[in-house]
Image (cartoon, rainbow, N blue to C red; front, side, top):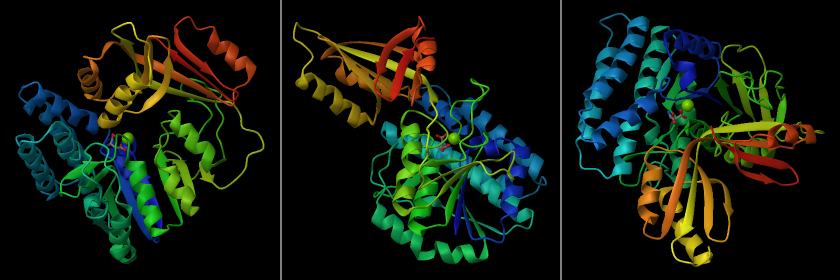
Length: 415
Ligand code: ASP
Ligand code: MG
């Protein structure tokens, strides 16, 4: 059994979907679970629907944009009377129905954004069948079970493993299995999501529960490089990487794989391939149990960062009590700190700018601190740095915050 994962970029238009289906049909002799994200930037577009609703605006314009995008793709892939058009329309009816329910904010978020994956997998499963590549559409929520923590559902591993083991291997005998990344079902039977970009994690969950032979994440890059080739043209491609090194890279923000992906695979010794969907014959990078003699400097850039500074209001110093208030709020809102620093009277953190989370953090702590924040920042991490690289980065006048340890250099840069 193998697990493939295709992200939004690999299914962003009709040509991309045809290419992806070619890759899948080249493996049609194998037992395969294929985990797929929403098409292109659909998740962001669905967030815009929620934003409109929260601002008491009419949501039809935002919904229409998403509908037209998928409709155009379907028109290129199917005949006009194909039943896929009804299937997709029904998901949009469902979306409108969910929008008027009386949900709390995070619950609403998950019921709405999950539609992106449901639509994409319906379209792709139908297209594969049309091309005579037998595919079965599976609802990932029947397998991936979480607690009731919306937007960052925590996996119930025991139940999930039981459900996956129950019938996936057998179903894979007859058909290629197509399912959604990113989504699960809560104890209370609502849809949950696993955190933005969480489809890689879904692939790792299926693989771990099935003790799969491997996971392959198909990307728009040739594999894992030591820098973004769009920024640093002479970036080098890793042929292989140890699990630990890859996990650390994802922690610092290497967007090539989701941070939660490595652990379940490493625990079972399942290799993870990162390969190019544009050059499917090339081997890409394999993440597995190995040792590298030298680790070249690796540059990781995380965009859309937000620096939040909490200043004590009275003349006390930042102390454990203040800190615990801040950490408690962060943990309740599921915000992760990417870097932190304190002075006598203020504590600063750098976090990802995530839809509507910062607002909630400010709201929950404004009576305790004077809070300032900047958005649109860039966090650079140089892992295993060499001196000449440091010199290059440290001269930047726009550095707002800087940290250096024996192996890693990190700097927060203003726009
Ligand atoms: N569609 C979701 C997102 O954009 C999950 C994923 O792509 O992995 O965050
Ligand atoms: Mg994605």
